[in-house]
Image (cartoon, rainbow, N blue to C red; front, side, top):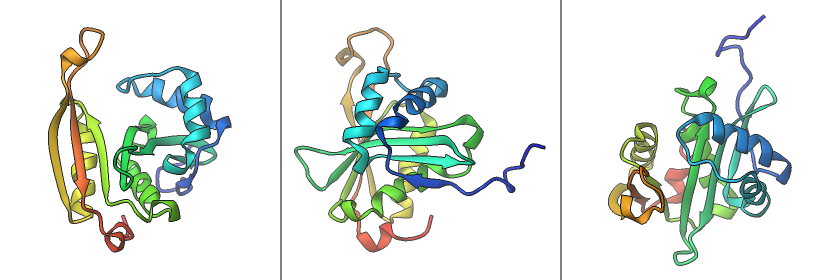
Amino acid sequence: MTKTKNEQAEFHFRKPEKSDGGAVWELIKHTGVLDLNSSYSYLMWCEIFSETSVVAERDGELVGFISGFMHPDHPTTLFIWQVAVDSSQRGQGLGTKMLFELLNRESSHDIKMVQATVSPSNLPSRKLFKGLAEKLDTQCEIDAYFTEDDFPREGHEEELLYKIGPIQKAKAEAPV
């Protein structure tokens, strides 16, 4: 018997572990829209950047992943590299829930800004980051960042820089 969305277990969020690397690679691969990096990079990401990344599980399956890191030149800025949600879980606010999970961690206490690059055709990510700014009652500034000419292969769309902030901790703790 297949469970309906209402009968499924709630999402469980946690820091990724090295052993999640393969499942994260598969998740990214199956999105069909994100740049797929080597499986090695996801193993490393889950091991080294686990404090600023999150996995989401539902019914024991990995269904979401966000990779992030603290910007080396701006120590109060969390840079979000990739947001992946399994197609079976889309439309349930999982991306936003994962972002709030990251912002509410003890290690995120000093975060004042969230940044991410988004290609113009990536409507779900555009909505995600604009929606985050709205929920945090803060600004979302969008600037040119990487042009098509910056990429070594033809056909990679430009990437715009989304800057969300300033973030006030009390607002980051608001329910999603």
